[in-house]
Image (cartoon, rainbow, N blue to C red; front, side):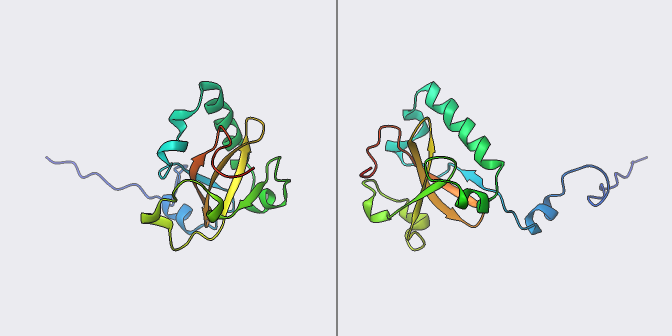
Length: 136
């Protein structure tokens, strides 16, 4: 005799409710590394720089976008960077029409990681560990 398996009710229990998360207004940053430029990639970083970048992202993720906008640029805040001042290409297949301003957050002292905010997602394009991406 075949046993019928009942689908779980996502509205009950302690499971994360994916549909609820999609409908919730997310106020904190979510970091995406899908579009990293090959010359400013994580694989160019030392192990110590990687660790410090992750630590900074964990710290930033605990704050809201509003708190990050109010924070000083060399602390937890960001700095606006014109795309025209960037020496590397922007991932044109995905963002060329939308990108009119980039944001730079800091890690490991003043080293920037630079990207584009699209809603609550921050797309990291560059990890500028040697300060060569734009004029500082």
